[in-house]
Length: 200
Image (cartoon, rainbow, N blue to C red; front, side, top):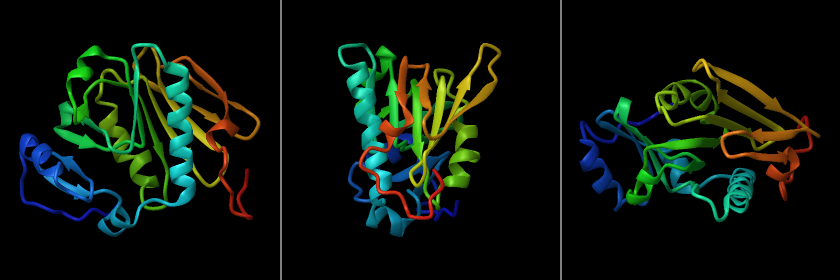
């Protein structure tokens, strides 16, 4: 994913303070800050399907987890990967760790991260970003959702610390074991109008 460098060096503390006043979201990679998805797309916003799928997933998780100890966040909440000195903005994140309650601007112990793919981020989300996320000891599942067709890939950490892929397609259920959710894949795509040539 092409990224444009925005500063020579930021400490993590400087980045967090600087980011509060920005209209464009930036991710932080070990001293450097980069605009989300490329600066033009950050300003213009995501397309309808991306936003709708993200909201559907967050709403499903919020309803499922209501009254429990876990919290659901979307889009504007940062996740810190402390081991790599990095901050990202996942589309949806769930944390069940009490220590995250005291942090207003980022969460450090997510159990579940969901990224809704786009043409500009698909390679990064499946590759380098997943490498960074795997350094989160708390993370149990990493979910990639294609907004243009019924396709959800859930990567789940097993007992041997290996990541196993559990794909779901049309007519199948998406199982998110980290939060005990079992939902039809179609629930992720409610109100989404698929392109005519999309393969479901």
